[in-house]
Image 1 (spheres, rainbow, N blue to C red):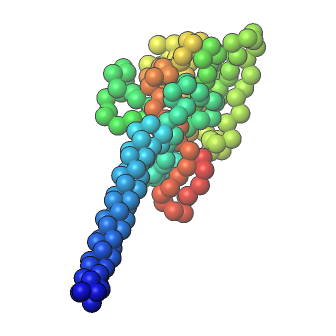
Image 2: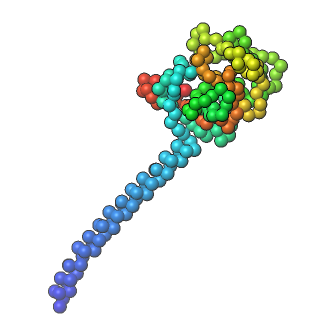
Image 3: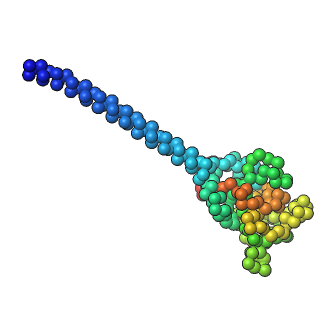
Length: 210
């Protein structure tokens, strides 16, 4: 009888080990699924709330950005209306008089809320909200010899000299002769700013922070 008992124990032991092996494999698969699911959720949250990929169309930001460039844009600043002069921003121009495209615009922030912007003699002048004096804005990102002018339609609307509201930004492209921007569209409210371009990711030869 002892031999029978030993034989039965010997028969059941491999089955227990085999079951343990299957359980380990299932746990490993579930762990990978959980890891992948968490990664997917984090990726979706990043795309929706933190960062997005944007393509550059046209040459309005030349020489800083060229047609066909791809940039990554951070969205966190839009939740706090935290924008600085010089930021390259993604703008929603839908329903603005003078803009009839579906694509977002990409321009540079030149004037901040409360400031008075004056464009004259090919240059941009800024009067801070707490000052009575204008100063000339130095724009080293422009190509040599490029002047900033306002067309007659913009002058008629007062966009050549305008005091910005508490949530308004004056934005222009670096390639001033071809850019459709605040000189014709007017200032952009903070809710029209959809992100700040922070890095060029394509072409690889232009890869770098903005």
